[in-house]
Image (tube, rainbow, N blue to C red; front, side, top):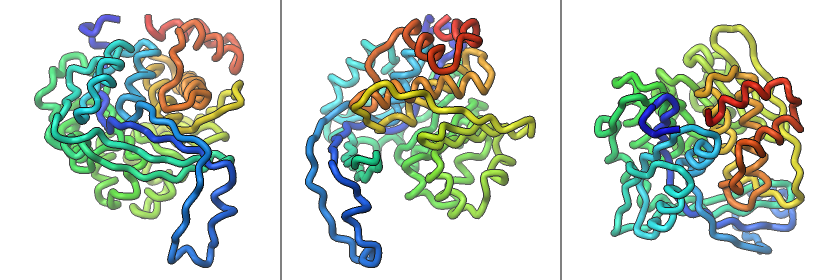
Length: 331
C-alpha cells in the first residue's frame, strides 16, 4: 500500500530501545521471601543474555508493517540507533519522524524471565526523555487513520494525548509499563477522548487502584476497552453495551518462548485488522495470531512472515470462515 493514500496510516509514538534479555532457569517465587520484602536484596544468576532491538514504538510499527498497515514512528533515539533505524526502514516502517540525538544513548530495557514466564525488568530512559519535544503539530496530518500513544516519556504521552484531542486525531491510549509512574489523574487525562484504551490484566489492576474506577466505569469513558489476559487470551469491551468479546489465545507451536513484545504484537495485529475494516472479534483473533508469532521469537519483534503464512496460521487456529475478510489485510 502506498504511504500516500493514508487510509491505514498510523503514527506510532512510544519508546525506542534496546532490550537486554536474560533467562533465569528457576522461579522468582522460590527465591523471594514474602516477610522480608520490605528490605529486598536479591540477585539472580542468569543462564543467557541477548541484546535485541526493542521499544514499544518499533515493536508495534514493525508488526503493523507486516500486516499491511502504513506505520510512521514518531519517537527519539540515541547515537547508537542508526543501524536500527535503517533496519526498520528496510522492514517497511516510515522512519522520517524518528529523531536521532548524537549526544545520548538509546533507551535500554534490562529484563529477566523465569521458567514460568514471569519477568523482572529495569529501564534506562536515555534519548526517550526528549520525546516531549516532538509534536503532532509538526506532522503532515492528512490521512492519519490512528495514532498510538504507547509507553514513553510521561510528559510526551500527556502532550500527544492533548494534541490528538485538539487536532481530532483518533488515538489508542496504551500506558502499559508506565502505569507504575503515572498518577491516577494523569491516567484519566490520558485516556480522555481515546478511541481505544488497552492494557494487560495486571496493569488494569494498578489503574483501578490509582483511579478508583473499575473496568466497567473506565469503559464509560472510552468507546473500546481491551484487556489482554496472557494465556487466557483477551477481552474487548464496547461502550455501546452490545457485548464483551472474549478472544482466545492462539496455540503455541515452538518450544523456546520469549514473552517480551507479545503485547505490542497483539496491539499491532488488532489495530491493523481494525483499520482494514474487520469486525472486533476477528481483529482480536488477528491480534492473538500476531502475538503468538512474537512469543515464538527470541526478542520482541517476530521473524518476518508473509500475509499468506499469517492467514494459514489463523485458519489452523480459528478455521477458514474468516479467510475472505483476512484478505483485506495488505489489500
